[in-house]
Structures are given as C-alpha cells and as structure tokens.
Length: 458
Image (cartoon, rainbow, N blue to C red; front, side):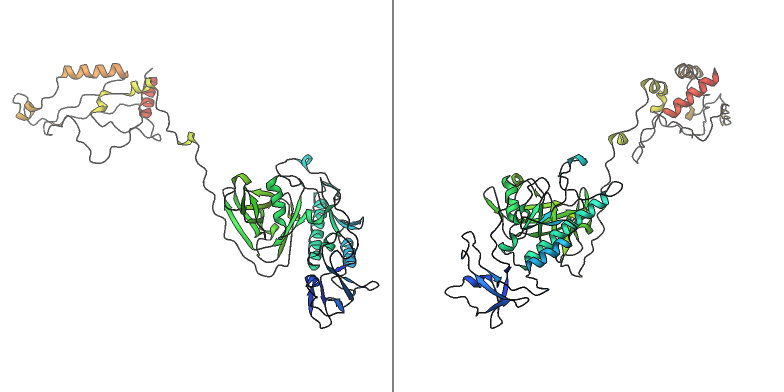
C-alpha cells in the first residue's frame, strides 16, 4: 500500500531565470553553485517559484524540485498547475477517477484472466455500470473511460517530467488488488517496464492487471498457422536478467484486429491494460524475451500523438488446404473371393476379353447371331499345306471344352469359331505391348451380367 508523502508544495519541472534561460530540476544540485540567476519563475505561466534541495525539509525526500512561492497561484491555463489539472481530470473521467485520502485514484475496470472461460471467471471489481439487456455496451463504454483516464494521467505526469512528488499524488484501485496501489507499481513506461517483466520472470509479480505504455517503434502484420494477427511494439530501455544472462526486452501489443491497437501507424504512443505475460517462457528463452498482451476488447488500448502517416498491409496468405482423411485415399475394396472365382476364365490369360457393357446400354436377351463361315477355297478332299500346318481342333474336343466352360459358368457355350483358311495362323500368345499395360480391369460388370442372365434363365 502506498504511503502518503508529506506535502512540499506543487512541483514544477521547468523554470526560467532572470536571464530567461530554461532549467530543469537537475540544475538545483550543481556544485558549487547552480547555474541559474534568481529570481526564478514558472516556465509556463511566469508565477514566482523557488528551489528546494533534496532532504532540505524532509529526510525521506531525495529529489530536488521547484515549487511556487506561498500565496501565489498559477495562471488560469498553466500546464504545471497540478491542483487544477487534477480537478479537471476528475470532472471529465465519468467517475473513473476519484479524490480520496489526498490522492487521485483511478478505478480500473474488471477483466477476465487469461486461460479462464465463462462469466464466473471475471475478476471481481467495482461495478462499471449496466444498461437494459446484457449491459455489455454500457460496461465497455465505462471501461473505455477508465483507460482514457489512465492515458490522461500518463500525459499529465509526462508534463511534470515524472517528478516523484507529482507521481505520488496518483494511485490505482485494481480488481483483485488493494484499494490504492502506488501509480509506479500499476503503470509502467519505457524507463521502468523491465521491472514488471523481471517480477514475472522471478515469479514475484502481483496477479493483477497492469497498464504499460510507451512509444511505438514497430507496427506490422504477422501471418501464422492460426491466421493473421497484428502487433505494435517497442524495445524497453533496460534489459532483464534470465538465467544469469542479460537479454533485451520487447514490449508488444497483439490483436487479430488491426484497428484495436492502431497497427496502421508507427507514430505516437500506446497504452495497454490487462494481464501481461512473457513469451517465450523463461525456461525456453534463447536470444530475447517479450512482454506481451493479447487484446481481447477494443477498450483495452489507448493511442495518442499519432500523425497522418499510415500503412496498408497486403492480403493475408492463403490457408493451406486440409489434408484428406485416410478413408478418402484408400482404394476401393476388391470383389469377394467367390465372385473372383466365378468371374475367372482360363481364356482371359491368353486373349483380350471383350470390354464390359456400358451402364447406359441395357443388356440384350437375344444371343448374337453366329458368324457365317467363309466359302472354302480348297475342297476338303485335297487339304493344303496351310491346313496341315495349322489344323483346326476336332469337333469333339471343341464340344468337350464348351461343356466344361458351361459347367463352370452355368451359361451356354459360345458357338465354335469356324476355320478361315485364307487367314494366316494366329500366334499362340499375343505380342508384348510396347506401351505400359492398362490397369487391371475390375470384374464386377461381368459378374453383374452373369447374375442377370442366370436370373432370366430361371
């Protein structure tokens, strides 16, 4: 819990001396004498101020600073009038900043922790408001006001040069944490964000959401296995210690929506609020480590001081086609063994079988007409030498062979082919084809044809 500091007057970061030269608070401790020439005035409004050395009045004070003279007031629009600016902050915050116990406290919105599901996993916190229906729109609007208030506080403290006295005037109330967390322990910038990362590495960080801000140096699109995401990031001023090694630290916002983090521009500043994590894990770190925050809601980010420069990103890379399942790549099952036996024919091993009938052409029940034998050129009584070299098989042998085939296939045997003496003898085996053989023909059509003829015959 933050310890309230003893009031030492409103601190002023810059002054001008009697010569009109500008000085910051580091000039106060120059030895043997400060370089400025008194009297001193506020750089913004010209009110009379004085210098105060560290430990001059308070043993706990270690910072020298400037403060306005008693009884004097800043100008109506002076940027260094902390009291006026704090009041304006409360009035414009929509109840997200309150004045309590001498501090301005930011009321942070509740946020779901990473790795949890369901509304019951949301960290309890102060009510952010509700409306009719689900209330999500009203809650998001109130949460956005809180992040906008955090941005205003950061800019206010930057105007005061992050003076410790001015920083001590602010605190935060975080869901799951104490009521008043000191502002430097809740909100980190480029100069001290390494402390939050180091606490996460060492396992000593408080399990609460934090705000981290800094200048955008990189904004880009990243295509990965899960699709496209967008990043904005910068390199922290100081490294972190991982396993005895000093490694550079990157601070990164990531989102699947470019507009949520302002990825279209590399200019300006950003502030992100949420549960920050390390990537990769400390035990897997090689050359660098990243403090990252995945943005799940658009109100988690604030951007400011951006210019008109923008960038466009090319279309995302196409996703790889899904690998077909094994069942789509397996060949069709072969016919049963019984059907293969019924379909097999010894003559198929020597002669090219007739092509199967097309499914569109119905099978005819009328057997084909036998071929008419050609007239014999030589009388049977005087056989020629050609007939002696290639005699036709006896009729009895043909009848036996046809009967055997009919018994196996249970169908009428084909009529015997007449001998044509004018044609030279055919070789016993067909010549070897010069082209690669066609793939084996499926025998299902012949089986179907045979089954059809058998049913008709019954």
